[in-house]
Image: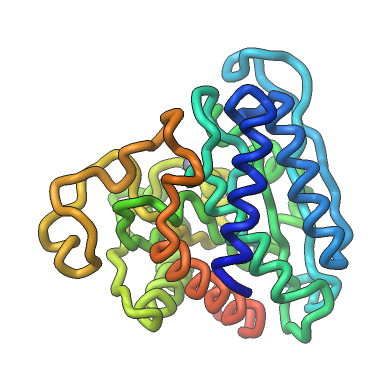
Length: 296
Ligand code: ZN
């Protein structure tokens, strides 16, 4: 696993956007090409891949019809105990979405390739690439709501990855803090955030623990599944204390290209990406080999 590998996926997603009108929003040809790219990388690594469709709602989508999520999991590990790591595969309409959220996609792809489909694991690891996060998280909501109660019960935890390579990025682990259940996640979420935070710290950056703000984890949270999240901040400004602790520019946005046309390959901060890639791989390895009873 390497950040060079992850950067190669980001270059591929940039090329897809360039060839499809400058974006990868779902639904669009650029989104379909992104689905095909992710499925192709996973199949080449030996995974069985499914691309389940979901209905686009009249309320949130400019087009009717369906779009696809991408789902795969290891053949190893106990399938009654599934650790799910997910990231959204769509961009906004007006940009290629290379940090938001190509960076999450590239991270999942590198972890999946490095792990392989048959690694010796205690629990099964599932990788989920969701469409339409930028349209009320429709892909992840349809996916979770479409699972049987039994299949939802098998999910030990959900780990969301959304923006992990911003030019002035910070280091945040979500889960277990906030004023209500939608912000904290269900019981067990603090433990997910704590393991991610420890993994980030072991790469040399001590993260802040923050609340959920309604991304792809929402449906998992509502289903009572312990959840955690990795995100480096978007439109807010980095504080002086954060710049001192983590580097970067105080009083500047974490990502000046957030949801803009300039969220291109040039927007990627490979140092931030490298910290998250190592920490998320360590977090997945931790939970894939842990006693599932300790969380649920
Ligand atoms: Zn995002």
